[in-house]
Length: 308
Image (tube, rainbow, N blue to C red):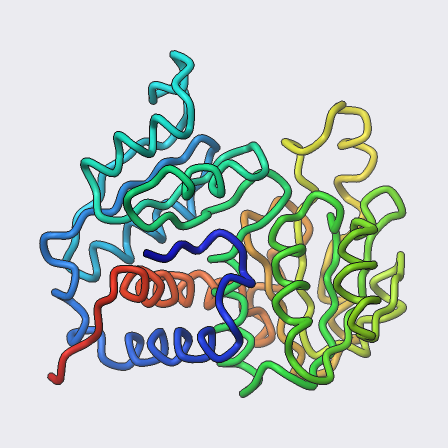
């Protein structure tokens, strides 16, 4: 039995194969429509979510399976003090596979150690978000044709942004990648990511505080919101929340084929006027997220498409 807890749990070759399945699902959805008939996905969301939870549910339903679970800790036995270990033991009796989001870093890993079914990390605190990373990789590969030789700018909350941490770790495995890390000093990329991922592997990177100064270099601009829920006090959040806003004026400085990604939800870090720009790819990203989660569910359950 295999789990998806960290984006590095799969090799680059395995990721490539997974993305190929996601591409095939996009082209031939009918061939996958009944592969999970009789299978159940449990969604254990101890933290609020719209896209990730519904994306998992849509993925399983598209595969012909069914879904059960909860959308907040208050509606689960966690409110009574039940441990993650006990919860997953119980869920293993009801479902065939589980997706878990939790505010505590490492909670999905703990769950996997006590689970009798495959566990997917759907986000743990400010740590990892591997299925968003798979979504990002599929989006980038679809838009750019490959996952190497690119300059990617990550902008906004790079300190608490789990999507950013997972994406850097994953893209660092591909050849000739260049990173531009754009944030206020208070929200810089954690030292351990810079030291253990970028510097340790000799990967080219640049830290900047002004998006305008570096946007012309970028093949991909990955915007993130400043996350209110990760701050210990409201004052710091209010001071930093509008640090970076992408608008038409800034886009005029960028390459014509640069792609703008965002894990969503956005607050106001991307102006609505940008939505109509052909470089805006964040809603395509949402659709790719369903395909890649379908592919991952099939992989972890050991299912393959039949000829159709």
